[in-house]
Image 1 (cartoon, protein in one colour):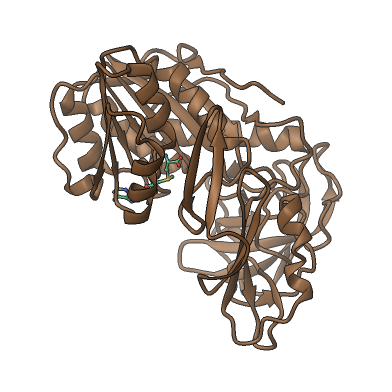
Image 2 (spheres, rainbow, N blue to C red):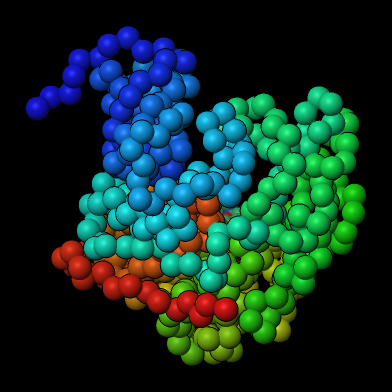
Length: 413
Ligand SMILES: C[S@@+](CC[C@H](N)C(=O)[O-])C[C@H]1O[C@@H](n2cnc3c(N)ncnc32)[C@H](O)[C@@H]1O
């Protein structure tokens, strides 16, 4: 049966619909008046009234404004700003924490099927802690309005909402009470907390309080990194990623590995320890400060060398045993994935923060003779649609559905 022909639709119209699948980005699909709509604040199967917020040539966007038939997974959002027209920061406050993790697993599965032609079997995102999904953000960005009030941006908006308290903020950042102060003249405020609970405030990237260097500790290793440089935001994410990468790649003494998009060498350090002084790890990272901080933190590992370069512009050496890559949200792209496959490693471990970009990169690896054979989805960003996937690829053809192993290396606190 074809879809109903499109009827006129405008911003502000309210339409009753049944919501379809949840897709990447935390939206449910719906078809008001024959249009394809991306709907926030809903859950699959719900009967709802939606209000149209944006009309484009191929899709419309909308918010749920009334729930007529609620999903059994719907809960009262802990945050009073999580509603239509409210804060744009969280997508899943209205969803039970257990179901958030089921949804992320489904989205990862669907992304791999649609963009990578891989059936990874049923997936569920693993929690990083026994938690309610709140108070985990160790890095927060506040926007400032013309009157000097710091708050959060609305969804797909530049408007600053006077959110007095973000429930995702870590305890130390919450204690800074940034929205209680006046920040006249500033554009944005960043608050960071390191793994020793020390908080800093940066106004338009200038440090105004707290330490400039963040001290980060993961297992027995420590880093002093520039406070504004990249570090995993969930306090348990760095350790969980390291543990999963080591479980996936099983680096052996004497092996040669590459850590692409290495940051300050979080993964590099543990790979370096595993391969020992008879092995070699090359870490490639474009952010100069991260390279400098990484060299300093890993100075005890002569088998590690950092290259300050864009991965895309760097010629991969032949004869590597393993490759780890942890690219930014856009993924690594076909050229980098092809070069990795052509280097011929025995294993490739991909750490991905965007399931769609990851699926496209997985398809490139598939076209060059590498198959996905183990996968974990980590709930490193509770209450939001974001997730972290850790995947192992090995030479061979893609196994049938159900043959992709689950990677499990999480030790919950
Ligand atoms: C998701 S972070 C991962 C860092 C590290 N694995 C960690 O967990 O701390 C991605 C890193 O890639 C770096 N990056 C982004 N684009 C890059 C490029 N074209 N070439 C090299 N590094 C890049 C960023 O500076 C950032 O440090």
